Length: 122
Image (cartoon, rainbow, N blue to C red; front, side, top):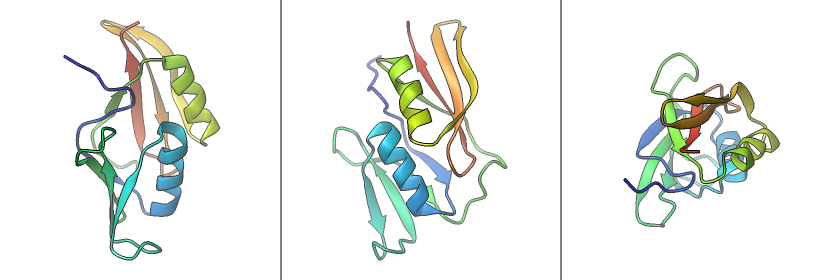
């Protein structure tokens, strides 16, 4: 299986404050977005694929962060650098880097309270 650094498959995240969510994910992972509706007040925000071919997810302003949903796992070629980027962008680490069968990972929350994880094979 081929992994893409900081890439995810399609996942929809609750994000009542779309601008804050876009700022966080753009700063932490370099993600780009597609606004659906007016740029200053979109109804939905698509997360563009890192290779520029389509979308891999979206930010849903009608969702309620932290109440339910999947734990999204992203893959990183440099787990420590990603850990620093999450903190620098305003995320909060919930579970620091730990080993698990298959590699290492950490869990964090974004500014909206969504919990996600990042893993690496080494």
